[in-house]
Length: 539
Picture 1: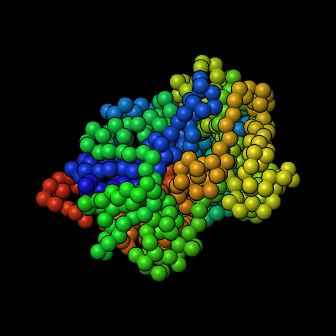
Picture 2: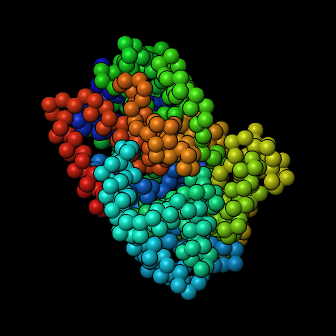
């Protein structure tokens, strides 16, 4: 009987398992899919000569995370690779805003849009450098992050206090208008904000866009050399080196609760797996509280709150094998691993408004990944392994382009949407479609079938909007990994601090379990974990 059973071998589940194993616990990880990784996997399914990431690709949060740094995954085969530049946002007139790991290069790109905007970027970067350590600590420690928040409060006062706090809660459109005269800086912030389900006019989208842009400025948007699954492989190797075990093809259908605590799980095959100390669930919040735990073990208020849980937007993704590099009209876009495709701020607002009206956008905002540009091992020399994704409403009422996409996501819907995305790329890279050797479509139901946590194609474990963050995440008053069932811990991106590959929800759940079972030797483990966090946060 293992000390802990972890449900789900996504990055959070594997981080949790590793930390428990570090503390001397025996750990068994049960994964529904035939391979581990959750949304961190790659394959050669588009073309045998091309590596394509099936879900996530770029990992600025992993690069910034003291949790990931503390695992020393490089000792288990992980190697990071970077594109020459981080993010590009080209416009159809040939101009391009460029986020580069060199702040002066970024500033020069924005200065070309309007005099003074380079200096404005440097000011935003200076604020980030002042606050970075405490922001990272606050992001990656359990909620509420008392010590980190206290330090951050002191720093905020030095950086302008209420004025700085105001900037962080502004809509990204307003923040861009206040900080920049030209469109370049505004688009860098807004495009990064729209990695989540935040409209340019959403409260807090300014702070999120600034955070993502500054993470890219400092850490880049690195990729695992060889494919995203290399990150998973390193986590699994590390766990196994410490005696942990990952069992795939094991779908958990029930958490066994008796005597007032979680005792283990039952699989779809009817097997019972007992846990001596804890069950950690790297599963979505609705799956945990609406399916895996029987309702009689949960407070009535939690079940009522669960009805108001909000997913983030649905996602539609296309992978490509390209015969050559993308023919960007704006040459700077060829340097970037990530390219944002929307022809200005108003087009971003239009896109978000159409989703709010439950329409399939006619000009979808695309996040486009150039993977061979980021890691030369992904495809033959002179070619490109690429992908793009866009967001959609879960409940589709109309197609803004009047092409008849219904949201059934049958073959016709999928081909129409993929063609629409390719036409959007063509606006900024004429001749793109002629380079397509092969493509793969991952519609919302396909994403969910490949990873049950991506319900309806939602990729962040729940909305990033302010009403479902901090002490509202995942439900009001449930901001910590402990659940109403003793011995059961939420370890997925549904928990604080949310989506992205950084390991914090898994680490927070593991630490909560360790605190509950602190023994004579546990204090030393806790000191090691704390020391790792302090060291990592100064990177």
